[in-house]
Length: 296
Image (cartoon, rainbow, N blue to C red; front, side, top):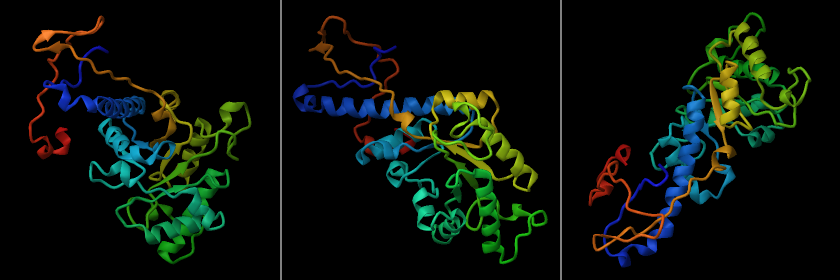
């Protein structure tokens, strides 16, 4: 019901009328973000959604967006500002900038990340730098194994599963973020559906990983994902473990309006508006700031 009230204020408007635009903006922003996030969470059928929208809008809205996204069921957020309200940590992921700092060597970047980032952050390695996600993953596994174990990695003999997992000196997941203008080297050239992160890339990668001792290595996909693309992947049963979703979560807007509907307990509203159903509303305690965050 688009006429159902979500907030009712009773009193003299001289004390709160100046807050009308501010309140509507906060409600609209947070509700829009939460609604979009909820849609992709439901589309993912229980697979985690990482909220990667911070870089697509002004930094002032990150805390509000993070609050809304996590409230709507997102698994994690990408910045500390996103995570601030809930008092949690943001997700750690290796950025392309770090790989560039190591002259395009993803393995060196992954090792540096592991050395300097605290153990509570799972190691999530971006592997699309060379447009060859599978080969880059194996390069990272080999170098990372030798860094952790201090012994030679022998392909076909060494068990890489020892360095797969959570925390320090482990690789938790690899992230495919192939540009929508590029075709990964392992993908068969066809039409535009073979560009970017697509089902064929993930299927081939998963099969190769599983045959080489990497069954527990998670695959995260990002880049151009929205509700429709996630639904497609889930319908096709593509073996994705996590989805990273960014700009698409900020496109839809939910509008709010404010109206006076009673004056001195008598109906008074413009044509088309009236007092709504308050049955789902609850009174805000005077000392609302003492509530637990989960109750807000």
